[in-house]
Image 1 (cartoon, protein in one colour):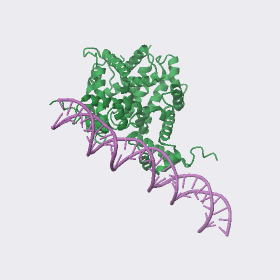
Image 2: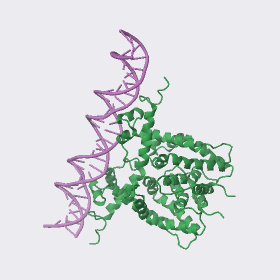
Image 3: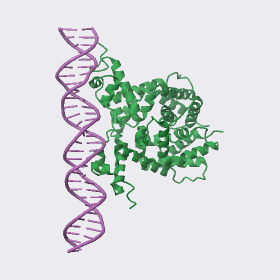
Image 4: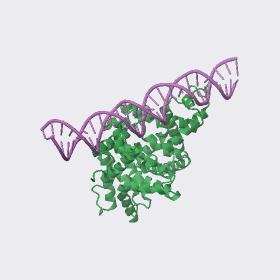
Length: 211
Length: 211
DNA sequence: CGCCGCATAATGAACATTCATTCATTTTAT
DNA sequence: ATAAAATGAATGAATGTTCATTATGCGGCG
């Protein structure tokens, strides 16, 4: 009887997946507004009421999608990254993984901005009113990408990276690639293999310690 | 009789400003969803119907706010930047202006992400279906920040900056600062004067041509 | 095999809200 | 007195959610 952990009533997990996929799809092209549960039901190929068998309400749905995406991103970014590699090589692999991932799952890259600007009580179940609770909740949610943060720590401690907080190092070397990947998915820019290499090198220049 | 250019019926422009300010305020803290015209009217201190004297509808309001913000940002970023300066100095001044602006108008920084992920037909009156129209409309809207783009061009042509498209150079050297400014406004990170200098230097490292 | 009972899964019309927008009326300024 | 500006109750459409009803899969029984 240990198959019932996923949902209270809903059983087959592929319905849940279909709903999550449809949510991501709508979110990436229509945004959070102009996105209704009825549209979602139609897109997912289920009835409106079915959604509420798998998710408590709209916010719960968004929250679970967010968690789901972070796990998938974390998994893909860290693929083929060896703990024993030097930080430079690890970063380059992660950066390439990120770009490749954005090509195979563009909806996720396109929806990233939506999540980034979402009220924190939806994503983390905690509001700005209690900063310490919010911080803890956020840390838990982003646990799947913690190894990346730790890589930045190691690089900084060994003076291979600049002496800056991890958030800053990530803002300098991950976010630009996310932005460019989004623009690339939207057809606003083109970037070939050589261009990608140059971009990654530029991001590396931003964070590496220049002796 | 030359005071009637601003609106069809509405006259006093401070009502328009009040509505725009209230829109920005709500947009930055509640996001696009959970933002209603009735809330807006209350916040702006006007009746619901008054909004429609100055703006055709909700989308028009958002579009005008977007244009308004871009003009203000462009104006502030280029303050105290001399055309005769070397590119390095120009960039540093713009970066500092950007940070300072984010402190004095945090709502604008907080709402940036909302606009970035908004369907293009709202912001530019053109959809993805006709890429050439969309591109032209976008260029027109972003005209106030064109001097910045031109600075990047000059820097690249004179081999002071890396040989990358302007969009890429901006993604590398402007966007990270926007991201950090947003996180700083939200209290998620702290950054003192020294830290800011280090961040700007890092962004400069990302785009400058290393001989 | 076919039929039955039963528990779970799924449905979608119905409901109460909330939304953007309108317009007959009132206020304001000249 | 008159024209422009502002109002806010009214309207219909759309939203998130519920729940009485229907469908489905399944193990036992004749």
